[in-house]
Each structure stands twice: as C-alpha cells, then as structure tokens.
Amino acid sequence: MRPISLRSPAKLNLYLKVIGKRPDGYHELKTIFERIDLFDDIRLTATPSGRIRIVCDHPQVPKGPQNLVYKVAAMLKKDFGITQGVEVRIRKRIPVAAGLAGGSSNAATVLSGLNRLWRLGLDRNGLVDYACKVGSDVAFFLYDCPWGLGTGRGEVIRRLDLTVKLWHVLVVPKVRMLTPKVYGAMNLKLTKFGDDVSILTRYLGQNDVRKVGSLLFNDLEAPIALLKPNLLKIKENIQALDVAGTAFSGSGPSIFSVVESKKKADRIAAILKRRYSQVFVVRTL
Ligand code: C5P
Image 1: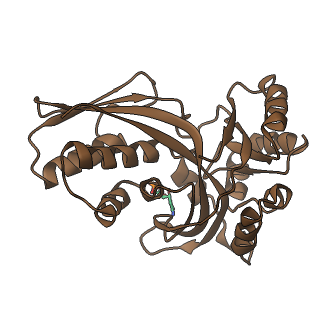
Image 2: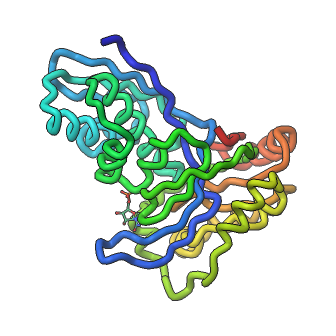
C-alpha cells in the first residue's frame, strides 16, 4: 500500500466548564471544541520490519512509547495481529503541550490512517473506543466537523451544526503547563454555578462575534493563574487590545482571542509579535 499523507489540526476550547471530580480521577466536563487551521502534517508508510518508528524533528516530541501516536499504533498492531510495521513522519507546526491538543490530534489522525493503511475495518465507534484509551481530547478529531460539544471527560462528542468561521489571534507563551497539575490545582468550590453553553452556541449560530467573545469561558483559568500568575497578565494585555474576547485554551498556556476580521487579526498579531515569539492568526477549519 502507498504512503498516506494526512493533516492533523489543532483545537481551541471556546467554553470549558468543569462540573466535578469523578471516581476515576478525571473531571466531568462540558466543553465546546473548535477545530482550527493550524495543523501538523503526518505521513504513514507501511514497513516490512514490523517496527513502529516515529520520525519528528521537534525536540519535545517523544519518539517512543510515551508518544500517543506510538501507543495507538502499538495497540492496533497487537489487537489485530498486524505483522507489518509503520513509519510515522510528523511535521510539527502545532506548539507542543500548549492546550491545543496537538498530540491528541496526531493520535486521532494516525488512528484513522492506520485503519486505512492496515485495512482494519473499524467504524467510528470502534475508533472512538481506541481514542478514549489514549486521551480525553482524541475523540473530537475523529468527527469530521469543525464544532463539537464534549461531555464526559471530553470524549463524548456531539456535533454542533454550525457554519460560523471565526478569526483568532493565538498567543502561545513559552511556559510549560502540566495538565494533571492544572486540574489538581482546581478548587471545585470556587467554580461558577450556571451554564452559558447554550447561549454561546446560539450566538455562534447567529455569527455574532462580539457576543461570542463576551461569553468565552474556561474554569481552568483560576488554577492556571494560581500556578503561573504571569499568564493572567498576558491575557489581560491581549484583552486590552481591540478584541471581542480572550480565553485560555484547555489547560493553557495558549491564549486566544476572537476578532471580527482577518484584517483586524493581522493588525493585532503584528502588535503582539513585538512582545511574544509564538503568535498565530488562525481560523475555524
Ligand atoms: O485524558 P488526558 O490524558 O489528556 O488527560 C491528562 C490528565 O488531565 C489526566 O490524567 C487528568 O489528570 C487530567 N484530566 C482530568 N479530567 C479530564 C481530562 C483530563 O482530570 N476531563
């Protein structure tokens, strides 16, 4: 079989409500996922060696069993008795460990890709079962949709039937955030009661960028600010520019804004690039 080339996109969370802690240690969530046009390129090549080989020139990407892509390939290989190996080439553009789910997206892309390459015949439910074994954010990328509502630990996905395409300025501060630490630093008693997700979804449906911006929400902001107070200052500095709203994505440190047009996004990005090294203009994909 010929090599398969795939795009692996990043996500933002426009809304992330932490509902409570579960007996399994994860947190119950309600979140709006948005797929964005910042993506890694992945190339899968079947090899006769039987080995799983990850090739990536990014120094922070593990090449062995800690990599979610490796985990996915190893599980499928074992469960389906595949004797072939695979070489996975990853060209990284999505910042690593940034709250953008780059690693989870790569895992989902490789899961669907190996389903084709190794002709496994898994349907989406079968793929989702594997996705949940490697991470909470993986399942969203198996749904071919730009918008999804995630519940459970984030892995139960309902497509949101929205056509809106938003422009964002994305700033990725060079700070390391460990997701378990961020969840661990949450004080569940302090999370806001109430649920604005249906109002935000309605504004998304109406393409009302200003109102969407005003309702961006992330319960992980408090623990992020507790662990890295400087990130909150960066967020406030961005919010002071002419943007409709600003929020952290996932457990950070990525901070994104919603803006009305590409022109405005480019103008704001030019200002932010003088202060921060990783600034992107991105759009709903
Ligand atoms: O599922 P994933 O491996 O991405 O999660 C990383 C860590 O983030 C988990 O081990 C857990 O500490 C925390 N987490 C959580 N609740 C979620 C998702 C993640 O507590 N819904």
